[in-house]
Length: 392
Image (cartoon, rainbow, N blue to C red; front, side, top):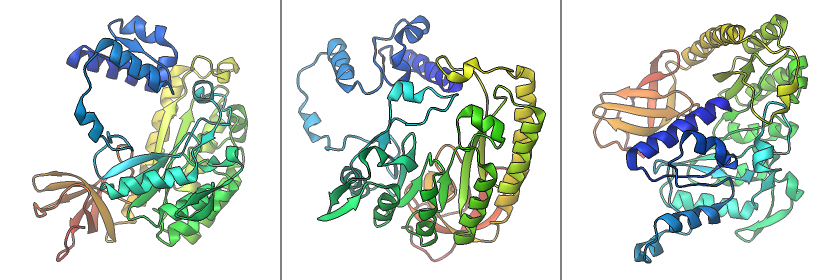
């Protein structure tokens, strides 16, 4: 959280440097004094879910007559991501009370969007050229629990507001579908067959956070690490190409060397493809601040480096297993004869890329290509485009 705050404050400073007129909104806006103390020149600060206040601030500082071109803005708004992929938010807030997290305090409990509304937005995005949908929320697999999984209408059919039903319907659209921020509830098992059938991408983003039962209990996270390993093995039996991304915290209060070693051993067993790691840092308002036995900063750094080195060898091994395979990729950027693409196992900005060279110039971002994987480094794959294919 602290790293995200620092990044946000840096982005505010960059925006002020570019044009000098900045409004700040979102989670950090819930504490305006902290922003104003560092960036006193911002014109206005609002918290999350305050769209009307944002518009009022804009009109207050930039009053102008009606622009007829605004009437041309589509009902779904304007995308800020590249044209070929989009984030599809299905809910807001979270019912969990993880001791290191303050998201529920800022965004409240889970509020799911009606499934018909979500599917309508997804269909519109695909019709406007989006080739990949990233399903996001604070707790994607809890989707619908607040609505008691009530039925909603979509194309004259009743559908329950559940993640598995949503995934099945999204899989009917002409786009890749990628699931993020999935809490490992038991019903996630029902989604894996959809991946094996090719309806949605065989990719799961699950923030496991740790493997020590003691620490998971302190974090107020599910503590059945061994059961999770068994489930991962079962998932891969159903869908061998499954890629799992996760994030972990090292240096959490009370973490012993035995706890940390248990985490490394768990990683060796789990063989996760994509992994991120954060050094624990206290966040104002988090319950974990009151926990005993804080880990010294130097020890946090040491464990972080050991973690990353350990996982790097696992990631390299998982990437090496894909060499000589033929895989579909989606093109993100074209730089001369060098193409930056991603496979089913790579989400934009947080995972690796598939680097392609010596390809024709008619290829554009958003195209799908079949490529043969020829090599890899610690994070990226390298490949060649198969001959005699028309970019899709």
